[in-house]
Length: 351
Image (tube, rainbow, N blue to C red; front, side, top):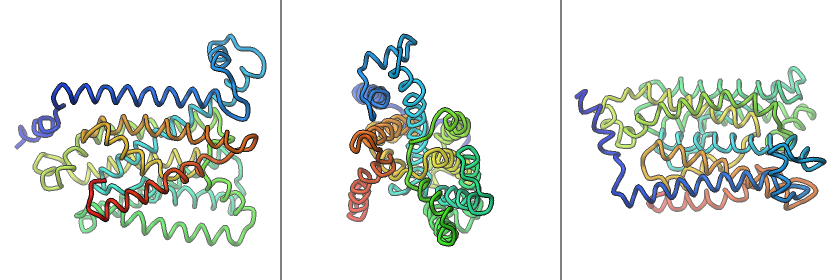
């Protein structure tokens, strides 16, 4: 049995013929180019458009004047944060869908977004916290606490027998936490203002401090996701098959669930609950990567990063000189896609 456990998953998921590997390589190049293109747009476009030469000059230290300040002090930290947060949401969504075996699963399904929102609300209402740095810590703590509670409840055997168990617990907990947060904001106008600003989801006003705060937990979440790849590959064959291949189901769920919690919690803390990235990106990545989880996570990271930065650029351009929050743009793009996925799932098709 040990020999089977060591060899079967790798043998079952070997790369296909040369043509399939060439297609996979071309897809990887396409994803990489999309990330580079999105980053270039993020640095060049905004309330003031810059020529590509001005951007390159600023990045290489040869820039002077306002263009250099705009690129280095404003757009570069914001673009890097968008890439990081988008990648975290994309990977978190891919892991959540693989873990629950639910193609409509979203990272927020594990209660992370609701936990972060309640922490922001309680910080403003009880302690009067309205500055960014402590709000980030509150959001990460609230998201982690809610996610850990979902994982703890989901680790019980009676619930963990079905792949929908974690999702059901997450939905129930999110409803409870959301009702508590709504009650608090309705009785305090200042808290409502803070909550409303944060809840939209935006990269505006986020800079180097936010980037350095959320980068370490996102790195931890990425490592946990990579450690979960083999278990998620086996779980795709079914729980009985995964157990026969030597996978410890409880440990696998806890590791993958912790990855989703940390990645999504840090992303939500940095930019708010950006809608539909964690839901839509893994489907596009899966169409390019195939079934192997390691490739799926890499493609999801790249596509999520590119999508969020492009959404942020669109929000900065369409109502210039004002800004449309990135969360509004992702919702406008993602809502029709989510409806299409739901319709396809109900009709029995492959999502």
